Image (tube, rainbow, N blue to C red; front, side):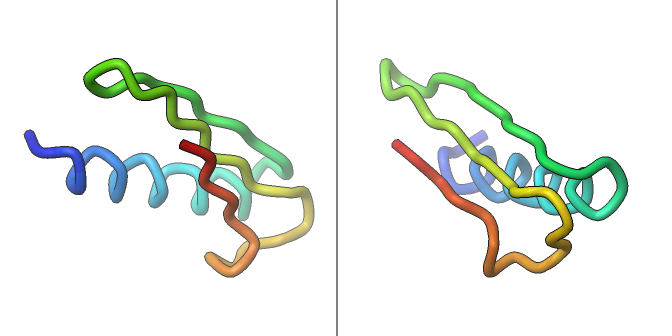
Length: 53
């Protein structure tokens, strides 16, 4: 599985979780790089998703 697929999957999960549960954070590591995806509360749009690598 390549990095883009993993990042896209995590982004999708973060955006759908935001629509149902409010704010959410997913953190993982790929080849030594720490990646954090955050979604704020009350936002179901992908425009609100923040990705920190």
